[in-house]
Length: 334
Ligand code: TYM
Image 1 (cartoon, rainbow, N blue to C red):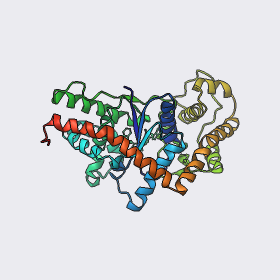
Image 2 (image 1 turned 120 degrees about the vertical axis):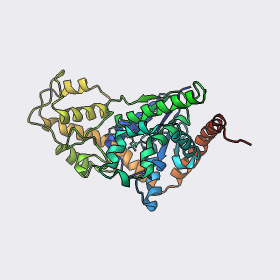
Image 3 (image 1 turned 135 degrees about the horizontal axis):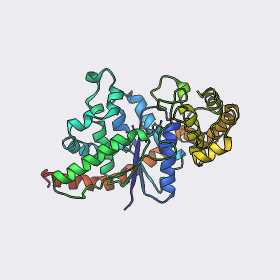
Image 4 (image 1 turned 90 degrees about the horizontal axis):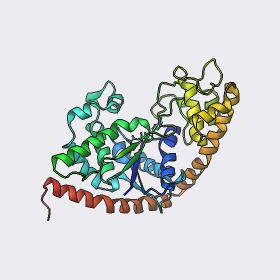
């Protein structure tokens, strides 16, 4: 059976990349009728320091973003990762399945640990192993994420295959399909077309936050980097115009059109004509989400109900799987 699973870290503000690469796609999959499991990755968040007083609020905020972007808790299971013990239990077993050599190749660890590898938490290193546990615990068939998670999803498949093989349980864990091919799988910075839009970019001008108001969004798009040219013709190669390509991708994803359709509409026009249209689109997509998030955060009772109910529904799937794993591994069972 089809089962969609994905997560978002509980570590600070969400941006347009998270919306187009993840949130918008989750809602589309749910609305196609796929059973969706979406969680707030708080265990992953603490691989770098999180102020305990803020972590709870950030967890609720991601839950609010799920609800505000159109996920329906009657259809989709929305829960905090740490509230389902099976995630941490399976991650331990997978720590003993995954090989050091596999983790040494993970580019996200290299980026996040930077020059200070020896001062990074051990959790940051084994982060992708926990991610594999998140996915396989639900025997997920499809994992929608932005392109930056592709390597982690490949590792997940490697861990599943090795577990199945080592313990002689072929097909116990299905190999999940990564869905990293949306219209905007990699939204780039508004200031630099070679850098990913990211919450860790020191320049706030580089990204559109889900919490930005209409003026802030319009201003950031007006000032976004382009070049000396005009809007491209259909079929024009944009390899040396990454900023222009990025803005067209964003427009296409926000308006549910192909990039060719967007290019055809604006071909030959100046950026002065295109940018205000893009700003209007972004504002009309994000403003209702922001408003709904604010409403949900004003009284957290509704969010807390959703998370508690989601945790119970998630555990009902995950606990029997981890029990089976314990038997397969040979742990003593009463
Ligand atoms: P996180 O919290 O960094 O990002 C959440 C989602 O947003 C996507 N994303 C982007 N998509 C397009 N353009 C961008 N510039 C951009 N920036 C971020 C991410 O790809 C992601 O889909 N490791 C995950 C969380 C996680 C997870 C999982 C995901 C934990 N366990 C299991 C899937 C399955 C992460 O750090 O996402």
